[in-house]
Length: 72
Image 1 (cartoon, helix red, strand yellow):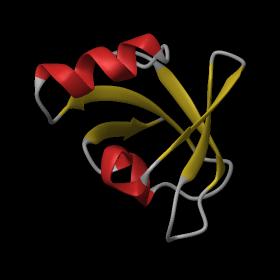
Image 2: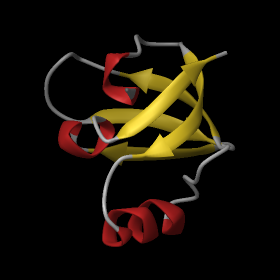
Image 3: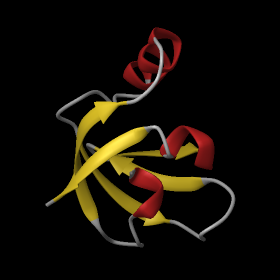
Image 4: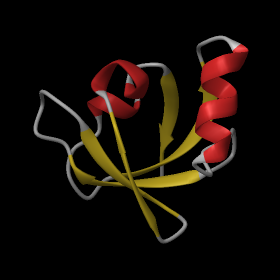
């Protein structure tokens, strides 16, 4: 899960474990299956800050826990 990555780690989105509303919301942020994400800040509680193709995106921990990641 994205929420498990440490600062500076990169991963590829393999699956979004949620309904179509969250899938659409993430797609609007540029996060889809196959996207590469880099964790900018993960304080182990509260929101995460990730880099998606040069754009920084903040997301809540609950949302990050629904994004399956393969570490690259």
